[in-house]
Image (cartoon, rainbow, N blue to C red; front, side, top):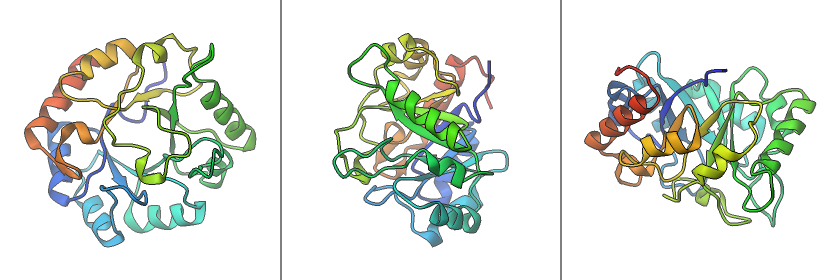
Length: 240
């Protein structure tokens, strides 16, 4: 089994204090949000401050949607990002914000995490995601991870693509044929349901934003610690 780049990611970090908090709690990745319209979006100066506060050994993931490879690379280099999460729609759909498969090749040298969704109908729950991954590989580069998030409406705007609290279909994820990359589970996770989500989905990594906040963009220290502890225990990892 190929192990993922991380096991517990806390996304939507907006302050240096929260960056230190999640690292001390035992998360091994943090997400810095650069998605237009998100309440957790970071401006450039604050992004550099937050990134500088992330403890050594904790992966810094930049979250983008509908941004060019040139702009992504500029932010990665200037802020000090370790990996990129592409959070836009997989394919064009009613004017939606799209991150096309060819973007992986354009970001060669930077680990890419691709957000995917479970198809609502069809025998293969990952048919659309599988097609995107195949096109990306044929274009020259495949992502390192697929992050399975909750479904969103067709044509949803960038700021509505994540952090909504909606829950992904865990049993449909487990029942689907495996994708060629490790899976990260996101969507509506909390300290109270993360263990059940890991068991039901079979995913080996989790990602949370709103489920550990007191309000959008502000992490609750006690809830963060509870989430990380519950997730690590369910994944069979030692406390950090």
